[in-house]
Image (cartoon, rainbow, N blue to C red; front, side, top):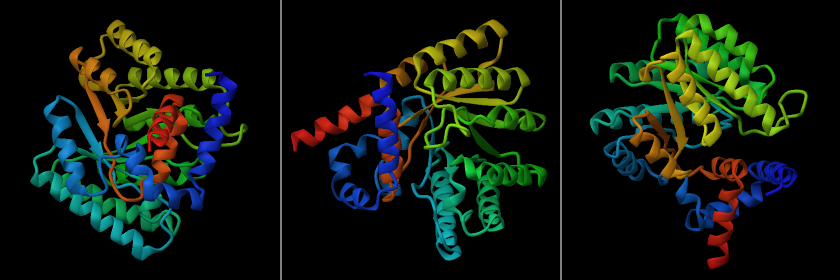
Length: 310
């Protein structure tokens, strides 16, 4: 598909991800039409079944309760309590699954201190179970608050917490340099939000180039690097670099999304690579699903085929 068509399609799908009317229709029919490929169910019980299957197949896993943009402290508290229950359930099931959370789901839109305190509860509970919590990155307007909360937790002695940096943002190189003294556990991704050109690279080639540069810089510095991509070329470049530099396999991993290129995931595991599958669940799956459609045209075609069959 033409690059310009891809760009237009991506912008349209990202706009639809916040469209209230489309969300209502999709929540009614979308799981049957293809969303279930990318979402491990609407309940924790359904998700646990998927997590166990993936673990038994040799994958690392993480999970997240889908949702974002909470607008009041009471709801943020409810989400936090549900996440605490998730951590306890994972420990009970003896699943080595990590947790990923969005700070706007924990109250960042209400107050940064509220999101910090809720996240700190999760990180503390995770620590008692030997678990790890990743702070997802959201739109560019929330990067400063997110990185500030991450630093506060690290300064308080929490080692079982990591964060995400997005290669499409022009600022990310400087953000990485500022974090490197912490020897952080980082997930490096391309990025999946709609941003203006003065904030984010608009050309795929520039985003790809920046992502590889960030990965190389992170790997050289000795922290832990999670390479989140389904791009064959970038995966090949990373694998060649770690071999050339003698970087141990306990210093990095590849991270991919549930339902996206599962054969590639299996192939990498067979080659001895550590592969973590991001396995979300929950009823509020619509924005997540639309961002997955926006990332790859093949995902859109999969959805359209299911729609036509109905």
